Image 1: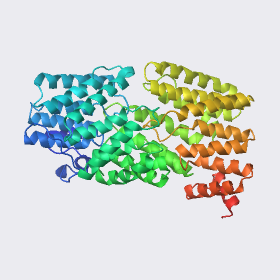
Image 2: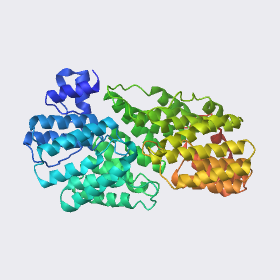
Image 3: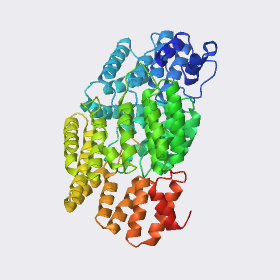
Image 4: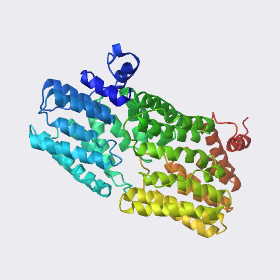
Length: 537
């Protein structure tokens, strides 16, 4: 029985929809729902019957861990218990946003708009609830992707007003803190909105230590290189607080990736992927395994990364996969090749046959192919993939400005590598430096643990090949400011320092590499060099 059918059966029986309940239904029908799930504690007061209030709180508990489908069904259950409970329409619409860091489908936006219009037709039961419905309606005011970010900004402002009007409404404060991070500009390196949201949540955490949304959203708000250390406490808490939610098990790895805590990321995502498979969460499974593959590669465990990639796809769901699935499916084989410097393997990745629903995921394959072709001595052949990147960036320009910029940075990086490989070294270095500077002015998306190949790392590798080891060392060390304990950046810094005659720096970086990858495969030559240099066996 697919997860959606299991969830509907449990809803009809009046049982809580949780991972444990689903698992019990799948394996022992006589004990379905007999165990209480570990999802934290949430109380979102609504003016509805006590029975509807209980189901509404369950829906919000699920929603705060981005368990959208089950949350939506819990809100429907609340409406069955109290048909006039207006906020159940709001809750179900909120669940249709899915992960707010990525635009929902136009169909979801239309469905959510209908729910909110029905809420307005019924009439809110008090001013506070009317404010929630009016605010969320701003997100669902249209279904064109190009304007979605503007709609999020309007929603942020409305939630700020709601928070000011009802300062004692803790759920309003939590929702406002979340949207401050979601709607923040990726070009704002002061992280003003993220820090404002985090301050709200840190204060609220003292009052509600068992609330899953607080620690979840703190992780997102601190998911930036200069802020990541502040998120360790929330990361370590969330996975135990909401241990039955696949997304909660995954989320600590957002912070662990930012600080190079690779073993923690691997463990988090192993648990998350297993839970996602058990609940039919295809997107969650692929997202967790992508982060896991990345962490394995940073520790030199290439075969473990290959096995993780091969395991993807065990989950089954009746709902169409979203961008997290498509992104990970394209990113993982590209990572496996590029992180190992397997240039011929990268060049041989199958080119996308046609543009998919998420063009920026096709760009990942074109980027890896272009780098692979250029680095394996066939730079002229990279032109078709570079042109594909240009075309995708232009296609996205009026639809999604963020991803258009990311793809064009990939295009510029690949172009720089190809120019350098073709013998136009100065032109290639100039192009790569421009790409690195552009990349430094933006932020990675939450859908990815990191770029397939940081533009500044590509620049550093080209400088090393151009026999400019001192300049290469500077760039490799700069990569580590945003991507700490990254295997290729640390190994590159060690080689550059050694070639520049800076033995102290070389020893420091080689020692760091050995610390990062104690369980690496024997085939990693970088570690052979590291052990030889520092004198360990």
